[in-house]
Image (cartoon, rainbow, N blue to C red):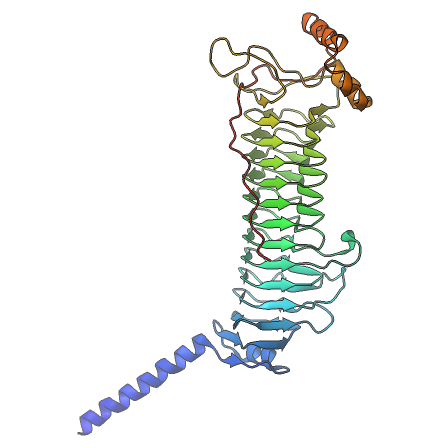
Length: 426
């Protein structure tokens, strides 16, 4: 009996230790009372969980050690009228499954729904609703941070340029911003002086720029969808960037802008129905554009400011009012290794059946230049006089003023039809 009682006692102590450990891991449930959330955060052990119950919890929270802050459905963290609602100042912190609202309005301090300080390495901001803050998530110098699966609604008052960004990334190498739904505010994702980042699967709408990137070397912009913004993807002052499988649909000014962007890949993107330019290339060099579809824009590609050594082939230019606008006098070849692009306005034939037109395509002849200056001249495109000028140019190439030439245009499109924009999550 003595031995049996001893064993029971040992088992009881062991069970108590297991229960205690489980409680430490799962964390306490925190009621929506003034000061309760911050107190629970301060008391939680490293690696512990703070679980907020349904209700309105006072914000301006600071997390200074590695924990998970999460909550029940309907758990709301409200700001205190200034600063950021949740500030993360430690490594390996997760903020998940909360509604976060009510930051301050200081643009100088980038008041945010969630602010990741430089010490917040490997922070995770996952599956939150971040609503009505000046900045949604500010990754301010926090390397390897992850912002994933959030719904971020910015502010709608004031001028658009005076609002904050959905996700602001500054000097946070290795960070990932993926599968977020971002709306309103100023720019959906703004990246400044940050390298080796991944921006993938985000849906961005009703913004100034969907993605605005400056000095973001070696970063990857992939499978994002931009709809109804002033500009889709502005990639500036960057090297070795990959821009792949993105969609720009009904953006106002440009679908994609490459400004001082060099040694980069632009592959498999679909830019449609832009009132301005599908692509604007300004002083950008040694880039490779292939497998893209540019359709229904006022200008397919505007190419200027001495951009050189770019490889442009295997793209579809379909029903753009002006396929190419090139400002310059040099001749630039837009085909590579005997393969050019498809041009919907190129009336051509293929005698040998190799899929390539027998005649070259020149989008920038004398007539095009007249049309740039006098758009009403388009009414005369079918006239004998216009056809005579173009026939004369074909006989005397010296008449051509220079510009883009595709020596091996494709006979049919190679890129699949545009992907429909993602559904509205909000």
